[in-house]
Image (cartoon, rainbow, N blue to C red):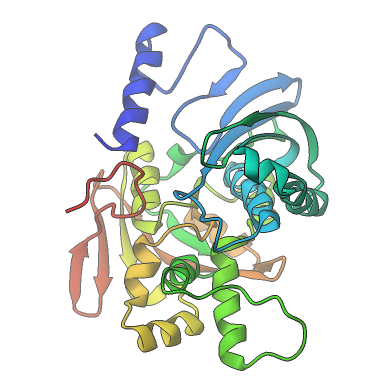
Length: 349
């Protein structure tokens, strides 16, 4: 059983408890969307809905202490939650952070530096830290980030709204973070020294920071929600192949993707060529780009801006009527796209 199967089992138990076979419904009528999306949606007051998400970062699973800095870890802890809220078409408001640290890490000043990174990003997007907890762990660092966002009532964008004929879009580039991770695994590190740097070092740094210091697409998420342009949306955290499968499963549809339209940074192509990596595979399965994957009804495509906050979008395919069938066309070849992105409990071999 992988992590997604486990989540579905828990979701089924909640459904059974409340005697409902449809999307999560409880006796608390204020819960609009529960398990199964990037965040829960709760009716808070007349005209407003709350969007609530939580994310764990575990040392040696989500980050390694010797490849990053406390400031970058604090940034990423908030960034991954901001991405979830953006994927719901909402704006972030209040954050809660709980940390568990080994005694030696606590005494090193790590916690203060982690919050420096968190507060820097929080200030950029108007997030107020409203609470959290601090505890001791025996060996590894554990960070739990919770974020509450807000949107106009009924404007939250769910995964289940895609329909046949809708166009599929992504923001930014795919595969950057995965390329950065491969570089980290091969010994590359972020260089922070001042002064001019060789072009190769600048290029490597950029990809490393896409992995270690992601830039959530907050502006795009808010626009797509407020203007009701996206029919369904998800952030790309586990990889395009996995996250597109999640969206299609919730919507009961399929998809056809054009490989030539998938936006891959030229820098990734160059780096991969020198290191025997396949840029298309990184873009399809790599994950942690924290770009937005969304669908748009044909009549709304012309309303999409070309860029938001300097970030462009690409139309990479179309939603089909065959539930669960996701295909990729690559020149003269068409092949099924299986969910091969990140899975915490995937068996090796």
